[in-house]
Length: 209
Image: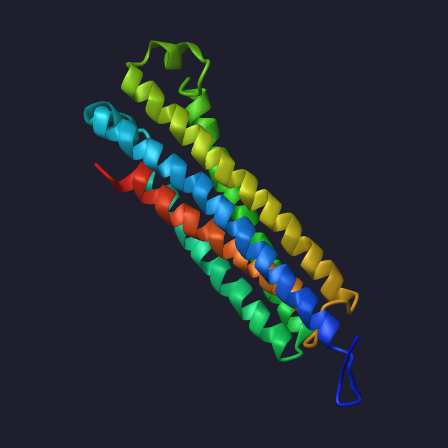
């Protein structure tokens, strides 16, 4: 606890913790950007080396489902931003409701992705399957990157959902309020990163021809 001119500042410790928490989150997000940035570069290099193969392979993806999932994530990004505003204004109930909507959107995204993956696996396009082994090198590389990068992104969706679930729980318990909402902000930052990554994944795999 700090003292200034004889007066104590009871919130100074909390403020320092909040700032440290935000800084830690920003550093973590930076490492995540480096990870996916490196994968994007790898993708672009291999695409430039195998343009026709990547083009043919991309036609196997469902643009409609990809577009739907993009809309879902954009909506979820909006709802989690609104939930932060709600908790800042002291409306815990609304904040929780908006977080739940975000969780529903995350679940919808994963369900759609499950059906997408299932379709590709059913057609033998998953690495290790017989049809996959017979594909030209460029096309097999495309599907390897598709499953790896979208799978890694889906893992981040799951982690983000768990974090949001913790925020919902702590908000219901009164541990997050208009006076203390750093965890909600950090959850929002993480979720925006997840959305941003998909904004890049979607055109790379589904739209660029």
